Length: 249
Length: 249
Image 1 (tube, rainbow over the protein chains, first blue to last red):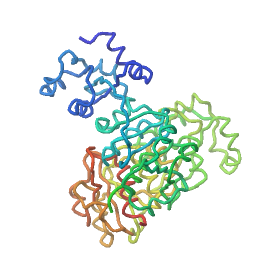
Image 2: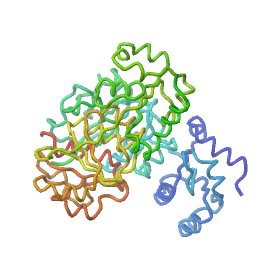
Image 3: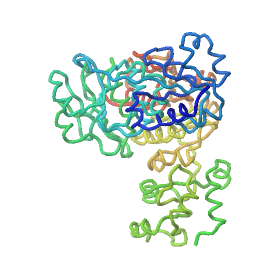
Image 4: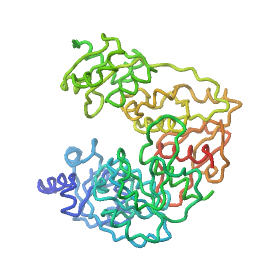
């Protein structure tokens, strides 16, 4: 049976402070939890689900340590959830710290203080769609283990490695990799040749990319507007840039 | 002074049923409300704002009918808001029904049962960014006057005309306009020549485009994946397609 202490523990993981301290994160919902279990990239700590869900997924459950599985009712799930609406399953996984391999010869993404969890999740999904395996985030970017981010990634967290670091220091060491900073006034993406390798930097939703980081970019690029909107959503801009400059003609 | 009856009236506009019946919609927040007032595309019915906001915007206020302006406190605003967090200004505008002009020679968008308000708002903003002036929505698509949509458009509703209609009947009449349906298995957007005119159809977030509508498309197109994500967010896909097939090389 799930104890009060465990419920409190799960609730504490709504907060970044405790996620960092414990090295744990929450994934919620049938599709997302199943993707994490099937991928096996993250170690399962605890799974709480309604009886029906456990029965429906009994083959999958039989492969797990039975001590990690707890049958709970919908009321308990609604006390655990970090989302607006509770799902019929919630799981706690062990998070991972990745060392970044050399980014030479690869397309990678870098996020400078991206704030919105929905944008972060959508960008991780975009990376996964385009086969991009590495995202480097500034330390002030929204936590990729935020429950809303995990939800929005739809499982793509299993295939995209994310590192939080001082990105100025990180960029100083990337001497052999071209760095493309998306910024107003940069060279039009419609006039660029296709690129095969490089770090593409996307900035904060309202402030863009910090000046100290812009200085370290080898190229400044932009999506020219022919209309009147002041800006594009950061995730939409990320998708447009990748599809336009990295994909075959 | 704002009466109880008026408060109830504003609250009723949170629901599509009453928005349709009254032909009114709500816009919230400094940036959004100011954009609507400055554009003058929609007639202002009522503006409720904190004293500070009204004083700060006194030049703009002096151009409005004083009978439409109500000074209210933050508590009252938090009772009016249709969003999670109240802003310091909320305004009611008269909505508009547009007749669609001929779409010949233009790039336009069509949405088949798009459901998510955030996606709808983001797509309207994308259209505005790329100078697309017309969006045709199926009758079951989320209401573009939904307060969350209005918020997400960041004012782009002033420049993009949106029509809700039976899109099967609509497409049957568009004999002279090529129709591009975004669907899995369609021709790769990376292999297409640039297009100068046409209707681009984006489908429902989980169901895609209805078979009856697909049949009426002259071209099926897709964004090939080279990774593992099952799908892309609908707004991201819209941005990628427009930037890839309609914009100059």
